[in-house]
Image (cartoon, rainbow, N blue to C red; front, side):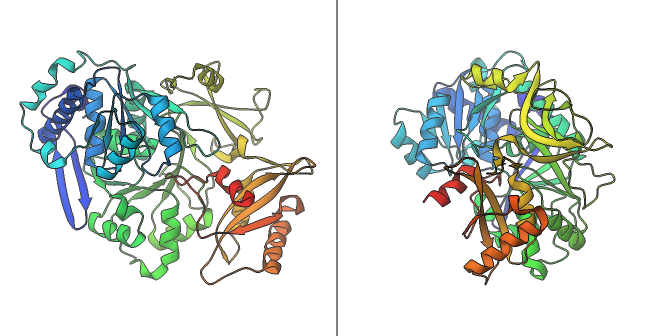
Length: 505
């Protein structure tokens, strides 16, 4: 199914955009003609093989077509987050050096124009793209690569930036196709199934699942506009309309559905066979509550942008709602090593390293950082894990996020956050370390109280005791902040550096 999209042809995947009460469909030859028409517009802006094209807009048919138009030209598609502030937008322009920019709307055009008025900018209008004819293909013929080259860069994705400045990860055609094939096989997706894939294209799950895996499997991608993803009630309405068999979402969706309780009809997800979550840590109580109500497995999977996404995943066969692991290796070899790079024994925590056939090509313009990311062909993930006797992998935490307490003990925020969220009055929690003048770090907790609870000083002290009783005094938070929402990126990952800023304000 990917062949016609890479090289042109008469067949193509079915692609569906769900809007407020409407459904617009692009499929087969009509979709391929739309891709060629978009490619001709890029050529008119000077784009050719080897260039990079930035995209700033939400998921949808225009983004899908922009990606495949870049592939057709041998250019690299570079999606960036529309919520980025000016500093990150300037960083993207500096790192990427785009030949052109595709925007989602006029307001985005104006924001980017204020930063670089000379950058060719275009907005794909779906009506004009869908009205293309077969003759549109000839307009780009001179610019198309003559043959498929797996090593050509197809995309650049920025890392999450949760702990440091985002890097631009270069992903080849071969790496993306390999990842899409792996996703279809691992997730057991089938032709004709409806996929509701909520992540945006600037994330690995947004790009790979919707733009490659869905057409590869012959699925029906139901696209959710941002306005319907950020409003839980609009999203529930979309779920009722779309009746997806497969859903990819951040764990936040589970929490929201669980909090709504009986207001969510029990038959809402009657046709859903599985939900897939990545990007942040799954809460076992949330998964258990969701499964008890809807009897839908929630598959936890893991991957870095550097690993081209998926490399660990739970399986549908034998799935249990009490499983706290990331599942088994998928399409890769793994090693778990100590600080010296030596293998650790089973059950011992160590850094996860991965070796695969098609990892990232490297960090754009940063060969030094690329070299530091690999050791003898093994990708250094920076994540600390344990392996069970049956091969499953459990995440302990990210090395860079560990808190070194004043007692010199190394503590990961995840174990404290898990306990805090077991408290009856806490909806969400995030933990970070605050450097102390005498050395080490104190533990700080950011809390989202449940509705109607406004904690006093004595109540916060009781919460510290709540953690101390379960994890010991070394792991009890010393200071607290209450907020309406935890700072996260669009993938649901906690922005740790932003947490610290809450306490420095």
